[in-house]
View 1: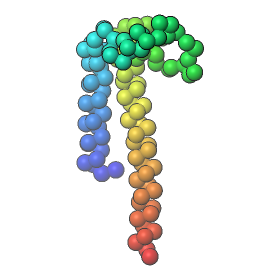
View 2 (view 1 turned 30 degrees about the horizontal axis):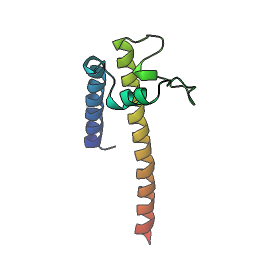
View 3 (view 1 turned 180 degrees about the vertical axis):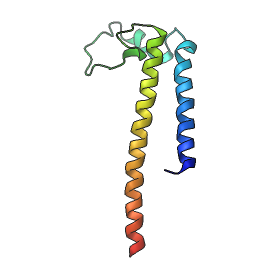
View 4 (view 1 turned 120 degrees about the vertical axis):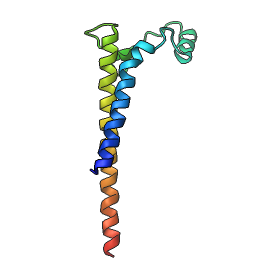
Amino acid sequence: MKARDKKFLIGGLIIALVIAVLAPFLASSNPDGLESTAEKLMPNPETEPVLESPLPDYTLPALGDSPLGGVISLVLGTVLVLGVAYGIGAIFKGDAGEEGNESSED
């Protein structure tokens, strides 16, 4: 990885983590439009989930509904999504690099 790309990646990660840390303290306690509309349309929204969420409602079940649980879950989610995106990018970059080498040999 080039030094410039590494600096860009680290800078993006730092910005994303700052946003993740500040988000629980800046978020509204009122539900958003989609959630409140769903509550109005479905009087009994309690249904059996297909899959259990590892971090339900951006909280850690062990910490309850505390801001610390929100911060930790957002940091974990941010790092996880960045890792998956980086991995997918590396796979596609590797495929493109191999194809580029094959076509230049012809």
